[in-house]
Length: 508
Image (cartoon, rainbow, N blue to C red; front, side):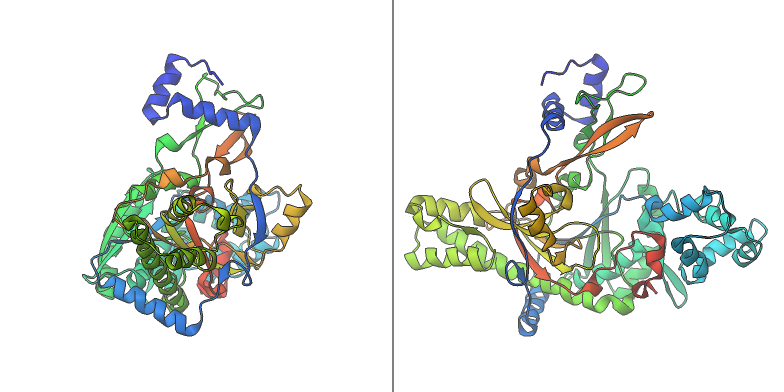
């Protein structure tokens, strides 16, 4: 598709580092759509999801603890650019409603339990500064004043803050934000032999000073508490990962001033940030999935379990790749590699036995020489989001992948049936190995499936537009990774998607 560009367009593309060919490719997707993957089965305990037995778990934890004693770079990678505004959707609707008394279940739950929130004391102080405490406001029926003080900049400004800087949990003598909980958690499973804990937050540029300010006040407290030294870094989604917006005619959408409109490419853009990491092993977990210290035991045990299993699998993969590189391998060793693909990595190719010897070795090397991730999966309890599937690739290989429901062709009865048979849910609990058997970093963008993005409808200036999201970080951006699914307990998954989620038992 040949798009006529103005000098202003060319300057904008250059400033973002976006080549013209990139927007041509994206506009082609608007016209043709994205192909749906062919799911063969929902991953299950019977096929594709590993349950780690107690004795195996102890071995995994031991393997991880031993790995921590060596000179490896471990990073805890936390996507934290999300604004908190979506957490307060119900409160914003209440403020704009025609009624003044809480009426919906969410509104009643919030105001009826308002003292249970970790931010209550700060909110009460902010309300008192305007002349009435929270209790007095509620007694006078001024519930909207309380909500406004919580959300607006004249009060706590929670509606404009990043989710990571909201007070989540109460302790004796202190309150903790989500960022602080990640500091505490990282100290419990990612501390190396020197006592260092490396944590990387991806944040919005406008929020980074707020994160820095918080950490300047809090970091030393947690270093003393856990006897660690934190190395904390930040990055932003790169402008080059923004995607072009299109009109309903699939041509570039322009604003009222005639400028091209770009939108953030979604969390899939973070594969570039991950690729920049100088790390051997990276833990990935969302900013809002945290618990108080009293409930962190299961999280720490299973983080170590996933990491230990990753190290064990990586050692075997490295050994096989070194054997292949040597050019000296026996029929028994080749058979062992095939069984490893089938049984440990859940990778199957129906015609593998019919490949010529040279083709077989090239196939084994291609499948083994890839980034590796071990992914925790929880039993599905009607949480929204993606799940684990076994997916057929273009070369006929069936392998584990994480897919969102938006990627699946639910108009196809067979595919819909497989989707509905899913038993597990993706909580974004990943441990990733980023280097190969020679110590070289994998080029992660080379393992992205460009056909795994999706298109949504948005609007600007009162006009509808089409927005393109890049293949998701743990979906299409990692679809060409070796992927292992492991069942983890539901108590390791405690997301905060709405403010009332903070009233759940695991956050109290």
